[in-house]
Length: 338
Ligand code: 5AD
Image (cartoon, rainbow, N blue to C red; front, side):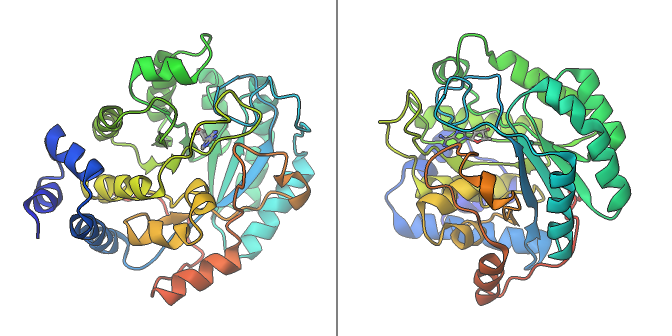
């Protein structure tokens, strides 16, 4: 095995120079080794089981204006919606009967509507007590994070988007600061949420050294979940004409982070499968261990367009691909297990 991959596996770390080399190399056999080693490490942690999460995109109303995002508040070209309690519960019902034991409620950042989710989370928790609830609702006040946690939410995803503060400022309006994002992540941890962070790969102005900063931030925070996907341009944003991020580089990051944090829950993201036809399974073969099929009612899916060409990761398709590679799923919460 190449020394770089071996050191990364054994020490769960590499100096910056080694990380840059793994991210930038043209040496395909080195990249294959990296992926294989990460795949073996995932199998040591999880066997050949892949955890499923049922994604419910509950609202595309957002107060933020992130320059890359299709549901940014200044985009007047989309129909805004928020699912009702009844709609959310019926999504859960459908997901549960398909064998899903984690519901992910994701939406734009909108604290006043998020407040309305407190009783809904409690109801989901009471109705399906053997299932986990993950939230992904952006930056909220501490007391709301706390209420949602008490109501029964187990996990929270809040991507840091980029670890470099200057880069963060280039991707976000002046009203958003990286400090707030990081403060929220620490609050979530304090509330004992299983916490997820992550970044886009190939977002405008990104450099390899910023990705190394992302890796270092993740290494320091040691999140239970890591969400990473390629940037994909959206026509109604400032970044419409920027190229999409690389699927290949995204997968290398899954591999590197798998070797650094063997037990972390790392999804093979929808964004990856949106730009690479067999991206879902390739992500798993590069060390990811989670897939998130979409359970949003079909009539709202187009309106939840973070980026263009978004895949739905339909469950049957996912299961077929996985079993062809010897992987399996089962009704399982798939909690982080140290
Ligand atoms: N391309 C890829 N990912 C995006 N996200 C938002 N807009 C885009 C885009 N254009 C991701 C961000 C955010 C998550 C909900 O979706 O990382 O945290």
